[in-house]
Image (cartoon, rainbow, N blue to C red; front, side):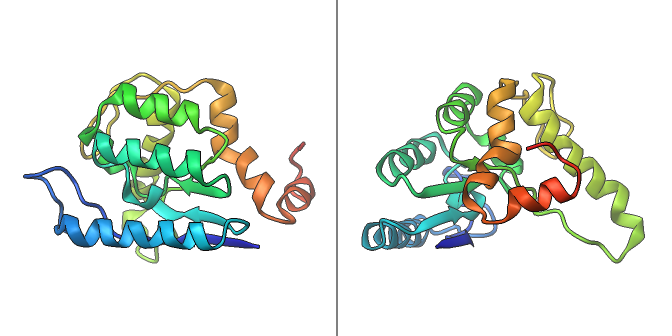
Length: 182
């Protein structure tokens, strides 16, 4: 069974930059610990934690996410909406994390359908920026520019689609019907 896109907590950045979502670090960690209790109680459940459970806003959080992924083999994370926070962490640490756990990370953006056509260009730029961050070592054009992670091709393939093929039933068949060679 897959429990997809489980949303845990909200961003909690470093002191002085806590963010507007979850400014209280105690509440943030209470929610993260709740996720771990679910993982402990249901070791066979495949869990995709949306937004990396917001454990990408501080280097120590990335270390904790390493612990979770090392301890719970059925835990996956997605990158949706996390790109705006990468400027808060050491880029080498973030890159090493993505390479180390490339078999457990799913691509996502939180970009969606927009009724207001005047905002499409802005959202297309944000979407494109996510590829720039993952694929190049260029300075990104996002809200808080960072140096791109320049991830290896095999890491990118895992993140972009191979990991999703592993855990979502029927996805490979659907992609074949759309003309992709899987």
